Image 1 (cartoon, rainbow, N blue to C red):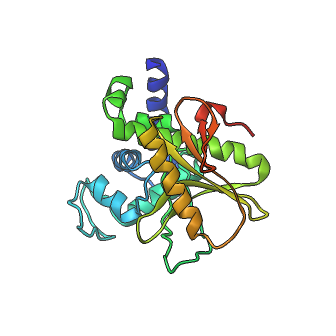
Image 2 (tube, one colour; image 1 turned 90 degrees about the vertical axis):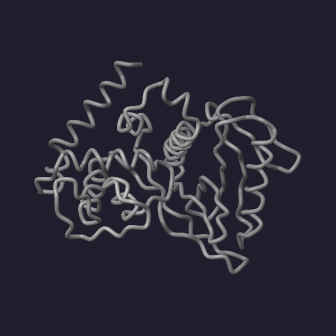
Length: 249
């Protein structure tokens, strides 16, 4: 496991020192690239906009506006962040999870900011320099990495069906981790939880049912809580509970 972590760290170092500049046609700083990658890793599986990435990478206080022409060896402007994000997408290091554009029964507005993911969560862990001991003692980060792992698997399994994996969040902060939509309009929603207790599953199922009640169509194929263990079952309310290891095309 330690050897795999070192291999990922070496791979990201190669990306920072060589591939990003080649992808952009600009001589970009590896130090800035490292800060952007670390910022993205801290915000993995969250809606982190370019300005937020720039503030975090720059070490600025929340709410501060970074200008596109900021100078200095540690400057991480929104322009620089945009260039790095574009390069990392081209290199298939990161992949955004778009917001779902559902038709709503209510007047709620949907947020359009994508969620940030590395193509594999092990790369996010490498960008953070986080090993097993650190992750097992940081439940919040581990939970976000588990969510990112689940999104990666859902994308893989949705591809043969030509499905896309989005996320749902409205202006009242009701959020669902993943929505898979097929070309014919059918969709299913997942809440992803690192935990299998009754309280955790009940809360996730209630969130799914609430979201489904707000969508103005009858094409919902399933609602499911995706967990890190346990057995697959269907609850009395119709919500499935599925361990991640039981996913299949």
